[in-house]
Length: 129
Image 1 (cartoon, rainbow, N blue to C red):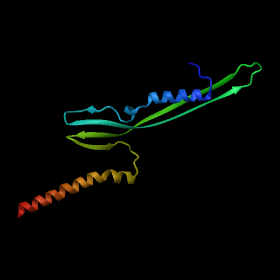
Image 2 (tube, one colour; image 1 turned 135 degrees about the vertical axis):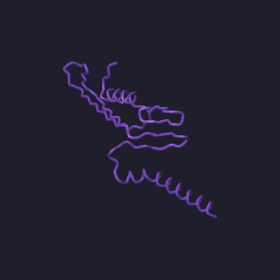
Image 3 (cartoon, one colour; image 1 turned 90 degrees about the vertical axis):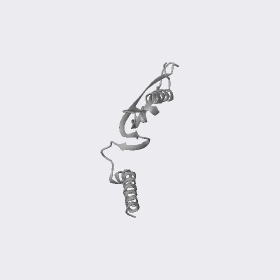
Image 4 (cartoon, helix red, strand yellow; image 1 turned 90 degrees about the horizontal axis):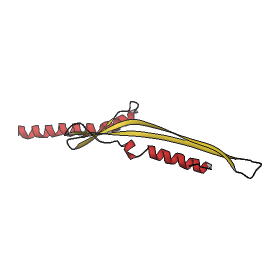
């Protein structure tokens, strides 16, 4: 199908990008490793597109148009959701997290450890009484 305008080229480019990028590109298909463990990949998708065109003057009454378009897509895996024995954890795989992100990501693990330690201390007190 021949597009005869810059808007037509842009529309076609956007439609092609939509066909390439869908939800399953960002949150991948679950991978079952065992009865207890399932892993779901999570990716960051970046895309861009450009198009342009121009009408050219003509001595005849024919309308002359020239144009083009293009798109680029980058897909980077950033994390995995790990489902293990009914619990979900997020495992980041990006190497360039900043310090604040690392601290925020550590909070659930720290809370779990503190809860575990205080639980053991409470059960130790009950056994001593």
